Amino acid sequence: MQVKTFIGPSTQSVLAQVKAELGPSAIILSSRDFQKDGQRQYEVTAGIDRPITSGGNNSNNLNGESPPQGWDEWFRDWTKVKEHLYALMQPSIQWERLSSRQRTALEYLQREEVDDAVIMELYHRLSSVPGSSPFEALSEIVPIRPWSAESWPERIQGITGPFGAGKTTSALRMALLLRKTDPSIRIGFINADCERANSRLVLKHWAELSEFGYFEASDPESMEKVIEQNEDKDYLFIDFPGISNPKETLTMQLSALGLSSMEFVVHLALPPHYATLQNQAFLSKYQSQHLSSIVWTKLDEAATYGSIVNVAMATGLPISALSYGIGLSDTLSSAYESVLWKLVFKHQLPGQV
Image (tube, rainbow, N blue to C red; front, side, top):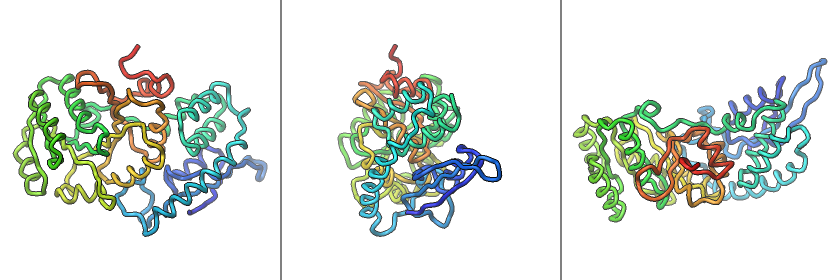
């Protein structure tokens, strides 16, 4: 673990230093304020789990590089130590520095299984600006880029995710939402998940039923050919297969399909059911320079929504869409702050009154 102490004139400026140098995954180990030359100074000691690469800070820590040998075992051990550290730090939180509204919000997020590291980050942000809104603090660490043609103009849109995460259904819903906004839009689907018959049949059936073009490509040659043949499409969705090989990553998968140098974006479909360690494993596996957003799926099946905040803090990736319910019609919403916070704090699905 790399540990460094930062000093500045305000907590906010110090935390900005931490994020800039160590990234959003940095862990706040301690903080204090003191007087120096008659001026108040703030000191924060922070650490980062993964060694920083010589290439500098990556804003989302998902640059596609493989972890060093022995990382998995070291990370498990450090995670246990970190849990004990946060258990010791929690009683030292000066709740009286927060307003009633701020404290209620943090206590609620704890019940929603938001990680202690995120709670500590929010605490420092809120306590440094008395009376500030919890939603403003959350918005600073949970970026949003709503799904729409205006926000996502890239012609090629990939979707990936663990098996059973609902990525194929979400991709179809995303395409239908685009068409609902603009009925004249031309959309095609490329199935790169050709080995699983069930997924293949589902995508083919619904793509053709929705009058989307349907194509298959499982190697660089067929992928290049299909993309060239569909230059008339406004959008091409690529449905990537889930990754089952422990040594494989999304970066490797894209390279095997001849897509590494192409300009496109990939959305990661994730349900909020997974615990922190499982999410960390997924994020490591699906890291790529093309990964651009999180699509939260199966929201109607979840008991808590803390993972939404945890993953945003860990990756810096924006949330683009929220997927829920049965069927394809009106079961995906673009991510907006008002919709997201009603989901997290009220368990109110998009569209519910």
